[in-house]
Image (cartoon, rainbow, N blue to C red):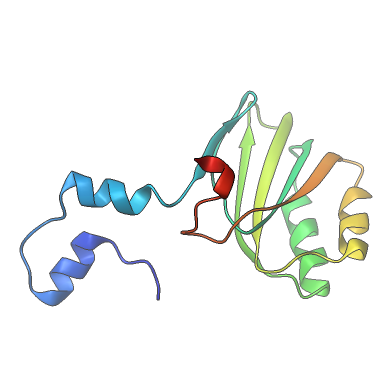
Length: 133
């Protein structure tokens, strides 16, 4: 079921009541977000299969990644990029619907502007990792 905000759900049902801050917090507490990694500010959901890579911020790089994953039938659910300056060092976080094949990762890592990459596997959205406490 798609996530619909409580305010939109209330409006659709005819209710005039807005959700309490506690209700909003309880719902948001189940979704971890990455908002800073080193000097980079970004906003990425921390769930499922993720690809993180550092790179130089150059035109065409995002399209290059999308083309590779499309060729290998890997859907990108979400992508966010954090950078300090245009054209400088940056970090990208991709949430993927399935694990990328090794061949796709080799193609991504071969790009001259990508300096590092890692695949991270976390629990699905809404499920707290056991190590989180």
